[in-house]
Length: 300
Ligand SMILES: Cc1ncc(COP(=O)(O)O)c(C=O)c1O
Image (cartoon, rainbow, N blue to C red):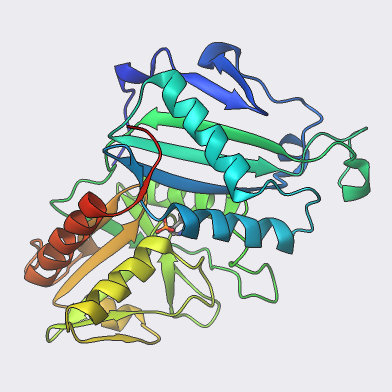
């Protein structure tokens, strides 16, 4: 799965610290914390027919992450929502849009990692692009990465930070193996997630997923767990090993970027019968219905 250039994004207007500029002219300072140390938090949001799905949940997660990193002057939800609206209106966007929201610790008075060098408040970047769900929903191929996800005593995965090197290294392994993405284990050898999504398996019509000790608290993941509860679908949150993956009837991954997408091969093994399974289909339909009837109305 390699994304390609979407011509609708040629003349995008990007919002950096409240300034709306064409993509070719959009700039952050070399003194900005995101350049200096990847010192930023981020969210990926999706716009469906003028509504952002789970906006509050995304902004809450961003706020918690920024607080955990001790950012000063974190913009409130209303301010961020206004900047998102401004960006969408400037681009005349209302559907098939992915919004990458980045909040950095801001500009430093001189280079260096010390947060005391930040004396002018954080930088908010709103990048809205036309980007339909990125995964091939007919079935993804994964390989298991050699790189482990951190436990909270190394770097708490609940902080949704912009330092994505661990994921990028895993993605390089997947690319080298000709796979779509990489399955990542925690330091105990249990499944954490992929380099970009959460993972579910289905066995005997029961939906199973791991906990969030070694991965972010996924908003799509939680939505799927809630859909299972609401629709009487048997499910359980528990440790999964690669044996649970190889022996699963179905597997799928979740994330804002790609919604729900079936996984049909892992480490050269066919999962289930190698096709999109009935539970994956059912949950995908329930998810589609939910995004079609909920979300925060941000543009008409
Ligand atoms: C490492 C990682 N895993 C999984 C996800 C999917 O989470 P969500 O469903 O909240 O988009 C993300 C999304 O940002 C992520 O960064």
